[in-house]
Image (tube, rainbow, N blue to C red):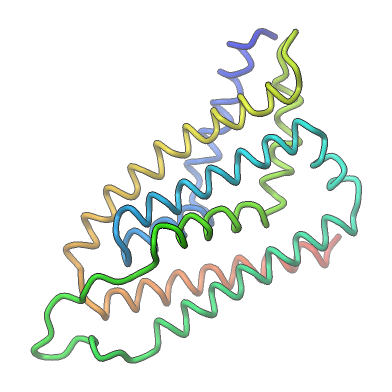
Length: 216
């Protein structure tokens, strides 16, 4: 197929995948509701950087090696599950910890808090890099949308770039909408509830990923 046909077909698949709520959505929403807007955008940027890394790995055949080796896949999966569970537990602890800024009868909006832009980027990047399912997605799709006369690495990066562009548009819209909501609910109790819900989601994701590794 031609480059245009390959990009159009892959973009449709990537768009459907992007719109399905998942771990990336939960991370960006939590950061947007509890931190500054730039931190949420940085988290989204880290997620997209992870996608580019997996796209390059898929084009170079690294994910094929990962898929062929049960041990390597299981180790990466368990590492990802541990990381997700660790983040989730940290958020749950923060969500139930009392602070001097807890709402009371005279409390006003909570002071600006949350993660820095650098930490948000790192969290998004590591979360995606430790998610082998992203690599498996690229391994399964990129070879199906190869174009005649285009080197595999260039095609892999191009398609990963398309995926990143779609993800960037979606996550940016999510950040802009949720940050406006967060400014209307700027209270310590609301922030704690966001941490509790997000922490619980991350722990469940971690358990699910760990169980999938045991089933290999």
